[in-house]
Image (cartoon, rainbow over all chains, first blue to last red; front, side):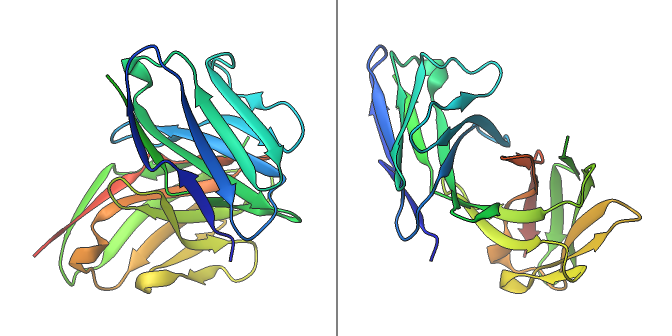
Length: 116
Length: 111
């Protein structure tokens, strides 16, 4: 139980294009989902927290107009990197908390984004 | 605010030797602590978690960690390293809503 999937697992795009990454909780309802970014050989940095049906809360320094987050249902959150640039290349990982169990997050397998 | 500090960005051990990865926490409330393992180009896999029950927590793959309040530590150990243990390990503490990660420790296992 408590499986989180991400799609795609990797994506290559041209500079200036937008890329959407999906995060799904497969066997549970997730009222809260988190988006993390991980640069090579570094730790995970929280980008934003999204609650189903409300606007995401972004961490300081994260551009909300560049990283659009939508959490339209209890099983799906999406992260759209708009007008991507090479410096946006990174490993993006989502996680989710299960309804009523807020002390543990379940992580997706990550999405490798490469912007050319 | 809650935070964790991992001592040592890189640990190298021989196969069969003891693995010790250090993590110290800072928290104004009883912490929920976690250890995760990450293999290259993969997400995080939960090794074990401390949620204020037993102070010695046993996890998967033979790992365990001991919560020591007096030392504000939650070090990860394994009696005998395998080659397959080579990976990046992250200690984490639950924040108000999110998870706060340490910088990570890369474990290398020498044959």
